[in-house]
Image (tube, rainbow, N blue to C red; front, top):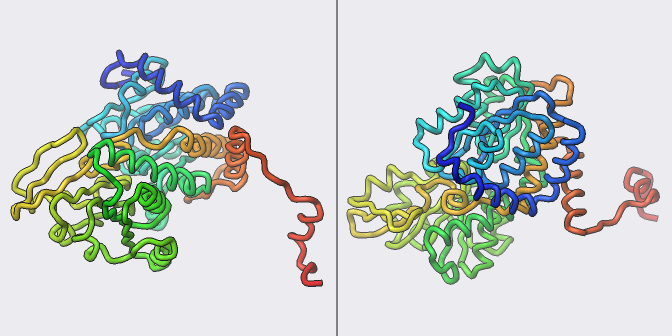
Length: 417
């Protein structure tokens, strides 16, 4: 079967969503036109495991316009937009995704992507790359390279490289400035608040809002929570990031001290058991927990369940845990990344840059001579090109250095007169 989705009858609705995203992703649209003219990926098979949203559909169609054959699976059981994948399937994309998959179904879909023997891979969380290495190593000789979209996935790739386990070249798209500084900060900041509000409909203003971590994603969450009137506490393990959070005006303390104060807790670290048993034991009744990291491991859900005597679903993406001591705690989106589990993910305008990075990186990998097997950075020129295109589509002009200024900046002989 060339696809498996929940309901192919949703395709018309999905096309409307994709059209809306396309209208708000002008950079990817420009790249798509060039790919179509040049047939950049003629005859290339791409395997992708990404969040199957309307923005991802815009990227997929840009690659297909360049001649690529794309096989797609979702990178999270709760992030797939069923109308969008129905629309993709109806126009020929080999897509295997639906919302609310079981773990077994999730793995089955990735297996189907690998069945198409991709020559390039795109990942959001490193599940496709790790599956190829663990389950289908015979595919590796024909894979020229791949790209990774998330902080969590890049961490996994660097661990693979360090252990000597990585067998084909990968590119850390997440680490480009046009992705990390914008998608991670502004995209995650806005969409995480969106997910919390859709899941709970609570007031943010006046609440004590605890952000676990202070990387680019967490910075955005803290910034947006403060903008909505929350009293923000940041918890961190990195002294430099902790100092930055202090200088940015937030209260910084260990999570064990923040636990009894918080009304809303959001993890955004990429690590496991960030909110652990001893934190949960100190939380006040009514506290809500959400996760903005890639995997549903940042809140220790088994620990939460061990303290609970009852659980009930209060809203579609909000579960109440009644603890044995009478307290009631709430978990949003089953502990999965709340911006996609309970909302629609990042705004199209910011994904425009991230997916432009993905498209141009795929082109660079495919057209490059054989790359060294390691985790590569995206060439700086791609990053700058995406930023220039984004500014142009926004109608923003910037200055250019004069010849005199270029000479001055490149000379060691110039100095104090």
